Length: 78
Ligand SMILES: [Zn+2]
Picture (cartoon, rainbow, N blue to C red):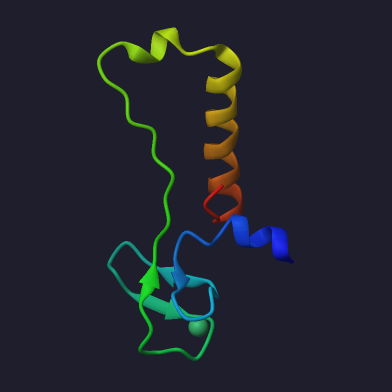
C-alpha cells in the first residue's frame, strides 16, 4: 500500500490520510474518526502563459491528459 501514498485522495484527513468526501455544497463526510483534524486537498496544477502549450511535446501533453483521466476515475491526486 506504500506506493499509494504518492497518490493521496483529493480530499483526505491530515491526521491519517483517510479519504474524506466533500460535496459541492461543502458537506464533509469522513471515513475515519478524526473529527477535528484538518482536511487536505492536494492538487497538481499546470500553469501556462499565452500560447506556451503549443511548444509542449505531444508525449507530455498525452501524459497530462492521462493524469486528468486517472484523477477523475480514481478520486486520487495523480
Ligand atoms: Zn483520520
